Length: 158
Image (cartoon, rainbow, N blue to C red):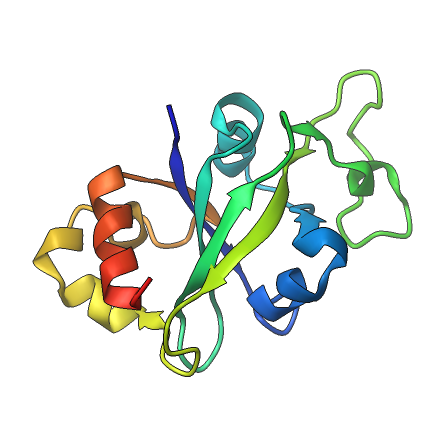
């Protein structure tokens, strides 16, 4: 069974275009330092799950495309052990990692790349009123119901 997710990234840090330009259009989703988001990646995400890629903390926050989980399972995020990384966690133990990540692969952009499915549009749509993005907006990795995913895809022209 496929699961559906929303993953947020600031476009000046890592954008959908960055993912598209990556080797094999695939990158690790590293640096997550929220336990609930980590739990989603570690315990529930699996290869083939589908992701709404969301640009946050920008002029027009919104869903800009679709990606897919391409790793077989979550694995330890190596940035937690790297003292030079901004994601370093000195309390994390290599024998018992605290932080995990998955690999994601680019699938597609929204039909009009200059017009994401914006947060105001999402918040005002009754079909998306229960979406975690509307109810608990700050989490960087969120689950999405299939009906919500299908509706967003329609709004995005995908």
